[in-house]
Image 1 (tube, one colour):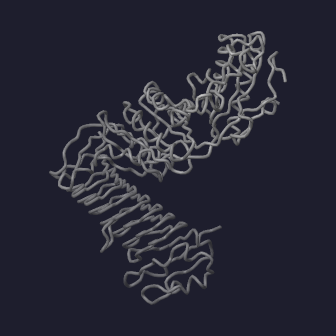
Image 2 (cartoon, each protein chain N blue to C red):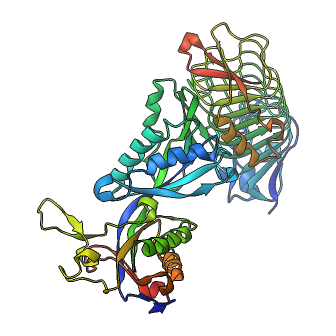
Image 3 (cartoon, each protein chain N blue to C red):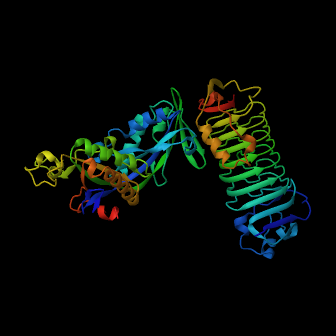
Length: 297
Length: 268
């Protein structure tokens, strides 16, 4: 399959079942919602080392938030419900409770995950509960007034690890295509691209020559190892970048991959883009397979 | 489908408990079967009411008077509309559905209610949303809306839910409240929030006298009021009298004789 001079490999991205939640962070203005949301989603690139993967899904205008203030929706993904609950509580406790003027609300219906249920004890007995519209909120006294948080948010089954690779003549060309892809994908609901700027340079393979490591560099896609290993790269390829997608549903991931690949191909062969490929583990590990040719039909 | 209308033939000689007449109990019964339902005074529904044809899920009690008590008590679903005044304990322990009283209600309206909505277009007697005799908690959920005035001790021992009084409330409003929110758009009598343990007494007008065991915490913008306002805006017509909520409140924490974890909020 060729798009705008860019070859799309007949391969698939292998993704995994995860647990996800959405939280809504509001603040006096968007600046402070971003401060809190960026803190919540920082160091949340991969479940391998961070406990969860998270990102800012979109900005919320005041009329879309429970308290009528501007805000952001944030998606968090983890490998189990227990781990997700731990990550949500820690991150909200350290990054939203602490941030001036911020409040946090549930963004999904589903199996309940604690949001303010335990954080309320920070109020040292002065916390107050309010049930409004059938939902319980906690008012926790803090130094700028009150931290308002919903008691729980909802957790659902989700998909983590959708991906595609952009093979280009050099770093700048690969980055330009991936930035275009991220711009397009960021407009879509239900997905986040959890790596810095949404783009990964350190694609990995399963296993390592070092026994302590479960994963190591994806040698077949490292341009400097061409000649040393069985490379997947054409001679002209000077850089490869990957975009990893976590989505609330399979359809969300599929839609984001399509939008991203479309945008990357839009840069085209003239922009130094050679091929689009995807990362998988032979199809044996992940329960979701996203075939590039099916997605791009 | 039209509502099932029960028209009172003549005022009873003494109080008449109508707790048997709730939609879920009447559902599926024909007029003869409804008429045969015994009432607490030994008479039957048919002796007291003319029974129309209609859907029991939407029940109308016409020619009501203050001797009809316990209307809608324990109801879980459907709608009951009362045309006229009613006696004590309307909506006591109701657990869902909607009870509309197009008139005044007696004492203990909505006492210990758990869910649903009770609306009284006129005035309510004492202990509205309060605790029935022998119970430790008053209203435990749902919405109690009184368009007119409330008597003394409105919301006494209230545990949860939202109570709104469009007019004035009498003495000891919110006394012994355990939690929940009680909003009075008019004025309140003496000793509001007496022995308030937790919960919020929300007042549109500053009370003339606060109990000495409340202390001024200053003026604040509290975010939960935005949530409450949004909730009320969902039914803008019903709650028009209470909207919009003010942006700032003066907070008085108390009752300090009971730990000081409750609050009286007065819109600034």
